[in-house]
Image 1 (cartoon, rainbow, N blue to C red):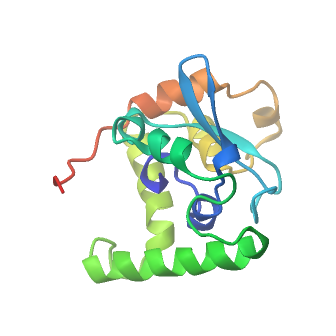
Image 2: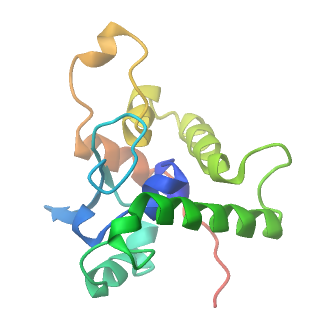
Length: 164
C-alpha cells in the first residue's frame, strides 16, 4: 500500500475496514483523521493500484472485522498504529531494501514521488495522492478527481514479487 500511494506508514497502519469502498469500478481507501493521525488534518480518497487488488487485498478487507485492519484494539489506535509502523521499519531495515540514511517508513514516500515523476505524472496529482498541500494559490483551483488519481496510479509498474 505504501509503495503505490506514497502514504505515511502510520496512515496505512491505522486503516480500518470502513475506510474502504467501491465507486464504479474503482477500489478506494479513505485516509482519514477519524482513524488516527493524518498530518494534513483532513481526509483524502486514494484509489488502490490494480496489483494490490489482484493480490487479494480487498478480500482481506472484506473478511476483516469492523475496525482497525492491522491491530486488534480500536481504543488504542494511534499508539497501536505507531507500534505497527515501528515494526515495519525494523523489518525493512533487516531486509536491507531501504538505502542507508533514509528512514524506512519515508523511503516509500520518496520512491513514490520519484517513480511518479519518471512516469511524467504531474506533481499536483502526486501531491493529491500523497496528501501534500498545494505549493501555489493556483493549486487550490480545480480538483484532482478520483479518475485522475486512478489514471496516474495505473501508470505505476507492478512489483515483481517472489511467490510464497
